[in-house]
Image 1: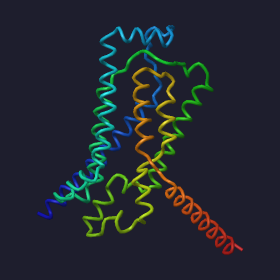
Image 2: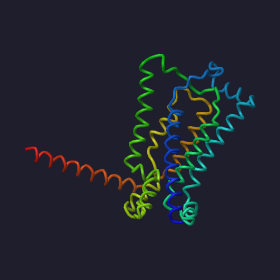
Image 3: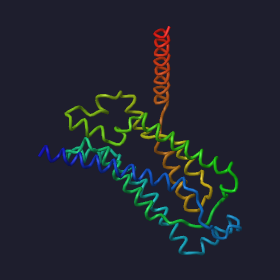
Length: 264
């Protein structure tokens, strides 16, 4: 039974790892790709476009589907992080796979959203970034920098643990749960408030589109509101990060001083 349980845990971890990376890659392309679809009635004002949308049942249906998909992802992303759900997985012997299961279902819901998303060719704004090199490079560098910060932040926050791989590996090796025995209480509290970076970069990516179509506006609005409500760092989290930053600076200064002494 133990061998079978370990095999199940390993399969969950590998599957979650693959689907998470695939979904994040597809999301990055979906959010940061240059919008080149012809916008309907682009010379109309936003108010006139809204009137036209309200009179078009097909467009209204598409917007309803998109809003439902965005809300479904929010629900899944929130439901599976509830303590009662985590307790259920622990009761059936999958405690070390809780994080991997969470990442897996989030990735699957994200892939479902991307597959069934409907683009509505009406926009709040639109500009062609290929008209000048300056526009193109501003768009490219802004999105590239934002994604780089998000990925770098994930690495700094211990990416294997963030994906749930470390928990499963530790369990298979007979080691204690990494979050319970190897991370401080302050760090675990911070993770419970902010599980992955970065609010500012994700907001920039969501709203920094060269063409803000109505479906993109719904997605950006719902997800930005969700992040604002779900990420709730407090003053203790701020002080903890401030202390850790100060300690890291002191360590780097000490290492630099020692290297200089050895050199001289």
